[in-house]
Structure formats: structure tokens, C-alpha cells
Length: 277
Image (cartoon, rainbow, N blue to C red; front, top):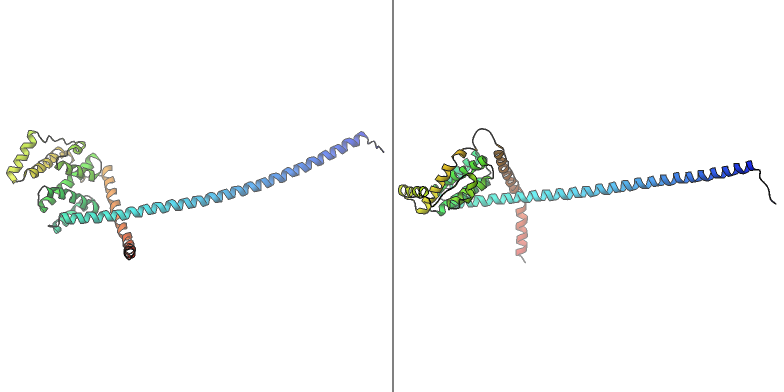
């Protein structure tokens, strides 16, 4: 049996079913988008959580490494202080009281760390004693060498230890490093030779002692503009940097001494354990 549906009813039926299909599709799309958003939010939260965990772990790891490096540097600074003190005591073992007094004065006057003041004085004193100067003579001249080195670093800029080392090398005839401070010495020239001979005649110094004294006198003369520069009124950037460096060295050494106090017993116990095998 064939039922013929009037055209208006066919159109309304088609419209109804089409609207029903579109409604179902729209609902499905809405459901899919909602689920998608839920999943996306969950992924974002999981990713953020994972990132936070990774960041926290990385920060902890980096902090541990930084702290470990700092503690290691502190222990090394304390070790440097011990070495400097040992060398200082060895070089000036004949005049311990005078040497200690001179070192303390230098440290206070020029804001030096104990490590630096002892190292610079013993480095210069050791070289001077190698020339044959007595402990007291070497201490007096070593102090002058360190003072002029500090003034050169202040006046020209640069590292204090490098400036002092340059002067010490010049005392043995290696003058190349002094050129950056404006010092040029013709060691085979008449002026230098005459000065050396005059020192020998008036003081009874040996040739090597006279040459060292002549060299230092020449350095003093050619760097006259830098004399007392560190102690002049006002503070330059170079002086601020030098003071900060010395303060840091002193602080690290103090911390290193504290840490070493706790590490030393454990190290000794470990050594005793190994010795038992």
C-alpha cells in the first residue's frame, strides 16, 4: 500500500528530522569540546606540575652545587692562609715579634687579608734573603716592596699581588713586567752601573745585593707619581675592588676554618680506618 503524503507534510517532516539531526550533532560537538577542554586542562595541569617539579629539582641541584663550590673555596682559602702563615714564619723565624708587628701594621693600613699580607711579605722577604740580606734587612725592604706594589695597583689599576710580584721579579733582573707601570731600566747602561757601584762602595753590599738595591731605587724613582696613592684621600674603583677582594679572602678563610674544624675529625677517622687495612 502506497500512502501519498501531501507536500506540505513532507516538507515539515524533512525539516523536523533535519533539525533533530542537527541538534544531535550540536550536542555531540558540545560534549566533544567539553571533554577536550577537560583533557586539555588536565594536560596543562600535569605539564605545569611536572615543570614545577623539574624546576624545583634543578634549583635544588644548582643550589647544592653552588653551596658545595663555595664551601670548597672556603676550605681552600683557609688552606691558603695556613700555607701563607707557615711560609711567613719560616722566612722570618729569626725575628718573629718584629715580623708579626710589621705584618699586622701592613694588614690594617692597606686593608689586606692576613693571607695576602703574609704571602706578599714572605715572597719578597724570601727573595731578598736569597740575595744574602739578613732577616731584619729583608723585612724592612720587603715592606717597602709591598707598599710600592699596592700603590702601583691603585694608581694604574690591576691586581695588588701582580704588582708586587712584578717588582720582585725585577729585583732579579726580569724587568719586562714593570713596563706596564712605566718602568724601563737599562741594566747595562752607565747610570745603573754607577748606582750599583756606589751602593757597593758605601754599604759593603755584594754585587747581587747592590744590583737588587739599585733596581728597587730605580723603580722607586720612576714610579714617584704613584707613591702613597692607595692612602690618598678618596677611594677609586680600583681601591674598592682591591678592598672587596681582600675582605672576601678573609671571610672565606674564616668560614673555611670553621668548616675544617668539623671535617678534620672525620678525615682523621677515615685515615685511621684505611691505615688499619
